[in-house]
Image 1 (tube, rainbow, N blue to C red):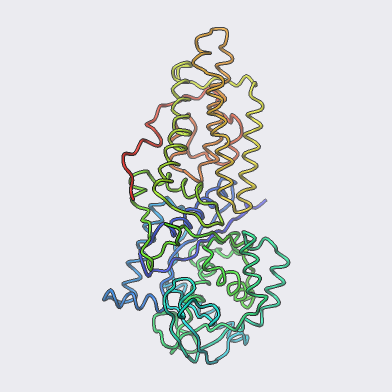
Image 2 (tube, helix red, strand yellow; image 1 turned 90 degrees about the vertical axis):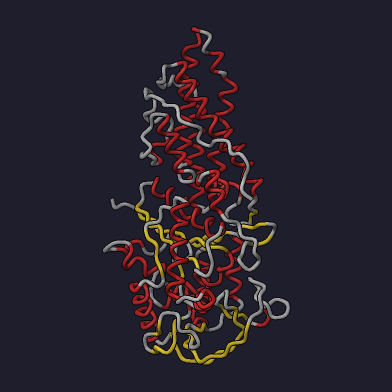
Length: 508
């Protein structure tokens, strides 16, 4: 039986400004999914990267006094560095300036052109350069402003090449109706379906007034519209970033993105794939905005949160945990220093970190550092472990990271209650309670081993340190290792410094 595969993508990030915590959120969520599916024994391909063409890049480069390529090189490197800081395990980092990507985009567009899905026409409309998108009058804000950025739009008229998007309306609706969970959460599915139902216009897929982009292969005086260029990255990366048989990963199992790019991914992207005779992704998971002060973070509003001070002070696992736990996946959520510190101190340090330290310390003191055998008296807790593992699998299958973390944390709190209820320090004083003490120490170690493996996708470095302190090989984090008591009796524990040490002060 062949190994199952899992292909997950982030959107590729636009290199017009430095990365912020909104970019970190998407990358961390994708990494958590990728790690969980690796735990299942699946062959995972995790893709992220940068989108580097278009008018916005050209203008930003001009302001900075450098070429668009030099500008893209510098900003792309920052996004690559962000991934390393976030402990992201992506298998490839694509850049839309990669020559292999450019060639494959041109090949695909030439096919669509030859089939008659692309034609020459004229277009005029209100254009937002930050969005790299046209808007109709009814979509604009007050005083003809962009509905996303709130900045003024400009009227553009061009002779361009058009994709017959309208010809795919019925096929798109049929796909939505046949796959009611194709877009999650449900409100985003309904929103995308309404966009199609209300009618879709043909899409201008080239620009004549821009030079920084992929040239149209049959008309080199024009460049391909940046969004079309960008969307195809999910396919092109497999041709040169996933080995000799990269196409085996197609189609994507899960594509993550924020809600502001829903239309591009849920309407335009599937139509392009239909035209190219490529299978559609299995699921699009749309998350909300990371907010600061009730507003979406953006360079325009100046309310960005820099993730790096939080990583420097608290560690990357703390940021990964906070974003997973605090912000319900699929909904908007507010990032605050106060909320971060509360989760860090109350849950990571006090509930998980102290639990590990107490467990290791008691095993060291009462059983010479060796985890005792299971006397079979905690069958209920063993069943609880199995139940929570099933819940975590189901949560990931439903693209709900937050619910997966919540399920794991039920176990963390159950183990803390076990300590208080059984009071091992009291049992240790009674020679007749030796078997009871063995049981509680075993159950704490076994429960911790299971929950740490379940939490590994969220806090990988901390989970590995904690597992090693329990005598568990930290490289063995497959879900088969998370079953109750798997190989833990008789192993020796080792004390480690606090997983989540106290932090004096906090970044703003």
